[in-house]
Length: 146
Image 1: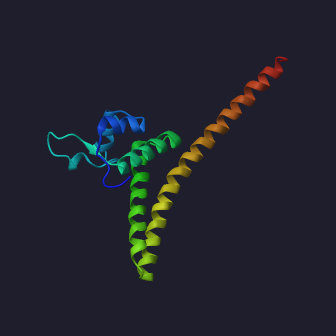
Image 2: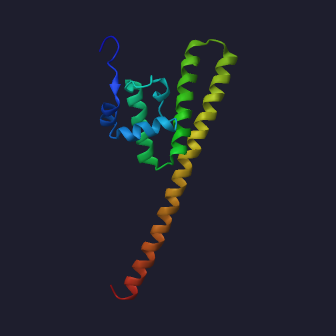
């Protein structure tokens, strides 16, 4: 594909990402997706392929991890910051600046890992609870001779 891609309207973005226009507007309001403030009064919302990728990632993380919108926002912000760090890292040859950038990236990754590990721990606790209940029910069935 050459040149600039055609702008994507809100309905198309919703369709491409399996969401609704209302969800897209809400993601804008809470800062998960930019664009709303860039739009002139009375003009249609227009998006880019980068916005499609961002919404898809938000939806994937929401569905996969079951995070709150605040936690999703933290994950997405950390990912955006890491992308900026990668861009700057590729353009600098100063070892001390590279070290600083890598340390910043590490802090963002640690934030993301903490959120993911927290969810994992919650899921493991739920799994243990359900396994205990299963064992209790099986023991009661066995006591009844079944």
